[in-house]
Amino acid sequence: MTINDDRGATLPRAQDIDSAYPLSTGQYPPPAAAPGELAEQTISDMLGWKWREGDTKGFVAALTGSFELKEVQGRTEAQWTPRGYAIQADLGAVTGGQASLAARARSAVKDSLALLDSLRPLRTDADPENAEGFRALVRHDLEQIRQELESPLIRVARVDQLFLLLLGNSGLAVGAGDRTQGHLGQLRDEFGLVSGKVNTIEEERIQTSFITLTDWVVSLFRGWQDARDKIDPFSQPAGGQPFFGPAVVALSRLLSATASQVDEVVAMLRSVFVQQEDLEVLRVPDPQGGTMSLGGLLRWIREFATFEGGKLIESAGKEGVGTSFLQIAMRLQRIVANLPRQSTGGPNGDVPGNFRASLPPGFFSSRVQRAIDELDDHLQEVVRIAEPIGREGSPSPADPNPPAPPTPQLTPPPGRTPPVPSVAELREGHGIQEGQAPPEAEEPPKPRTTRKRTGQ
Image (cartoon, rainbow, N blue to C red; front, side, top):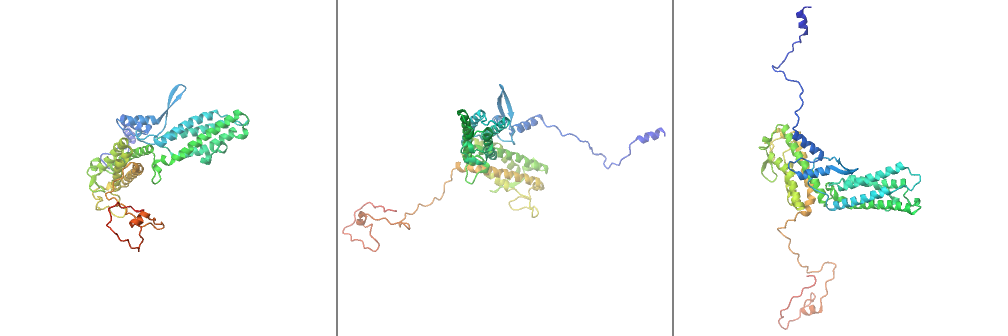
């Protein structure tokens, strides 16, 4: 084997290349986000609050709601409470009937925990580990009820479940400690806190502490049942009036979700090559007449969801919801609901008042249409939550055509005996029956005040 043969054996084989400039197949990592954007996103995820520059009030409220401070062995420890998703923490608070219920729960739980710690078993064969386990279960239920009732937006199903675990299925039928079920009933049975186990005054004092603990919990449960229908603004009965504080918190969360959905619509439009410049020239119809640019509509919704809506609620309260907030939300929802949709029965030709032919094909893609439908759903929910608030605060418009005053009733209604005329009325001629001739007047009647008959 020669040197040339060895050199040729090590050379790579020739490959056919179609392009003069072969494509690079190397994988490159995505560019790192800017430190400021990364910090804003991290803060939003930790606090459950959408970052807004200069909003110190909302930042402090979100920080306070996300961390719970506790005194542990002479030092302060902060425990992080995860939040569900980005909300506006500067709107809404525990007010009204919910504040009364929260204060009642705070006092009842504090006193109940003191009584719970003072209990000791009356059974001689009680298992200490089981007894402490049931004591820990009752303490956990009470603390969770207090925390839930103090939150701005109460999870009704969770509170119902906690009371079910604590009291069992007996609910309002509980009247004494001997009939209590749930964790309290298991605690009673394990400790032997029944009348048959009481033998001394000290043992009766322990049983009385348990009965008092049960009465406080049952009283708190009854207060919860009375206020339950007004707590959750998302499940109000027809004609119901929720508490203003929880309703404002619900609107705050819905507005934040609406603002995020606007960004989602813009992102979906960009994915089908509809840029920001195109949004300013694309026209969409207004149900009340005229047109507006698609970009202007999306900016209007974002401004309402991030600034204007919250400002109206914060500055004008219920009247602001009824006279301004609700009207703007309904107007935006009608415009979004009237946006052109993908035609399933035929080609997407222009329809009078629908502007289909003036919009690019990417607007009718599934991803864009789905994002618009979700935006419409968010606005519908905003209107649904705001309507009960504005129903009471909004003044009723004056009727331009008021009803005519009722005509005086000349004949008695059926089933009622006609009034008997008095002697003076008979003398003056008011009591003459039908068919009788009036007496002849000897002289002209003198002017007198007309008497009003009964029933007129």
